[in-house]
Length: 439
Image 1 (cartoon, one colour):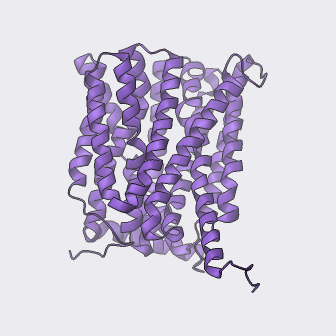
Image 2 (tube, rainbow, N blue to C red; image 1 turned 180 degrees about the vertical axis):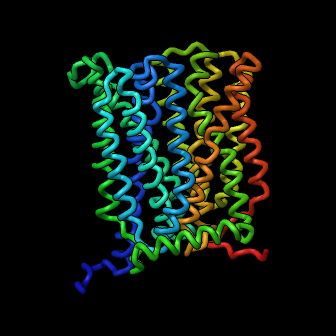
Image 3 (cartoon, rainbow, N blue to C red; image 1 turned 90 degrees about the vertical axis):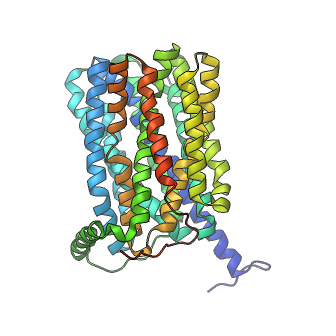
């Protein structure tokens, strides 16, 4: 073994390598954000509903159904995939496989022309890309406890989320002003929406380029040496046993239920936020995009700022404070009539979006038993996807019944309140694992 340079200890060298691995791990959030912002939220989703489907109402319904199918695959398959990885040990091969799947599907979306004959092609590959992205995140999240010390997991989780918001923001700005805008930097023809479709190549390239540091610099959990076939059988048996014995982990089950509620609120808020801004406050497309950029900025800043607080006060308190920070400005947004006040309360609300997501990851990283950690993050994905259709349905039904978007969006606040009340019953965690409770 070579000797360290004068004044440099082996401990310092180890610390440097660990930090390099953690920053490379956090950078994967930046890479993944290219798919989330350009495909799932702002560019391709809007292009599909307006130009491919040809009818925004029908296109929105088709897109929602596709996301529901993807959510079902993620929710049901996530825990199984996590359980298999817990048996095989290594996470990075799984992340690589599902990242490659997402990148390939995103690249193939470039071929989608603004014609209804491409509807099913677009839906299939958008669904595959979503499944690949979410499955990769299951194994990515499960790497955190093996990389960061327990007393530092909160800040690293928060920094990862904030990097995701920053990456998504930069990728969105690059797509809009480099490809889509009238005066875009790249002179891409607008025939057959080539300028919009080219953003899919940007998304795929972004994911590929910025995902590399994780694979090159972040250490992985050692392989268990268990053959894949035996790992699959053991994983399915373990998963069945875990579901039967869920009462032994009732604190985790209660947390996942609470997260399911408030995460549905977040999902619905993002899905309908632009619609609400346009319909209730008369904001045009450019205003809605600028408002979305502002939300990404405040959410990223909030995730970074609260990362330190997570380690000091504990993830449970940060979740509760963040939910309160979502409930109060959210209720104000439903009451105000001024566009200026909408901007103020909306950007204030954005500050608490990142912390509640980052601290949720931290709570489970602390609480999950080491031998079941990836499986628990599979259940974490399940709690975030299984009922993701409920919030949008509630908003639609309430809006139709009351004839008011304000009444419809009250469902979001109700989901936040329900999640807050359940989180009050979830105990804090201060150690890497909490022991199983006696049935």
